[in-house]
Length: 113
Length: 110
Image (cartoon, rainbow over all chains, first blue to last red; front, side, top):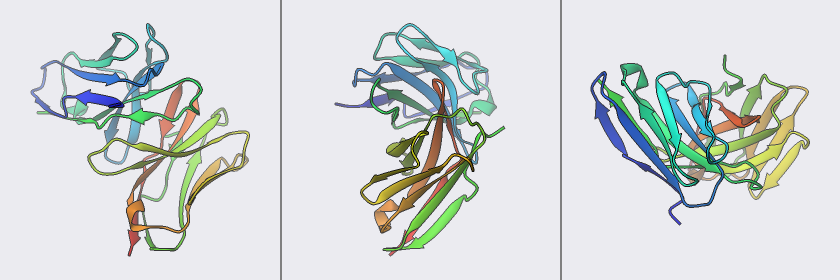
């Protein structure tokens, strides 16, 4: 099992460009999450999907959109990147009845210039 | 406003001694608490958790204590080992969302 995978690992964008961060899990988990990690801020929830077909905003959703494509995949889209979106992005998943622990991907380091 | 706080950005401990990492929260509706460990350039990995109806949970060298009246939890690592050197995040579950602290960087000195 690969667990949670994220692509790409690194990305540099110019202000105004768009991109989609991909996330997939092979653990048959119901819930998936997107976080960003900034220095001194910990991890902050951007969006989450409690189950296939549903998505909800987290703490910092502005400037992002998400798609829960199927049970395995949850993508994060930046329509018009801004320097404030320079961050490390983590995808995570958790399964029902597993004590709520989240399994994280390795992260995507995004720089917006 | 930060609902989960880790007020110590860093901690150094001698190998073999106890490491105590602290976490405070403000929302009394949080019903589950977790600790994660993170190495550089990797995603966080789950360490240990505790339900709000308990006050202690133990797993090997790791013990988490919860004091609901003080809205405080702590992670004890005994004995500390050099491989424990990492950033530790506490997290709290409220509804379907999780709220993370800013992390404490633990260094275990051989």
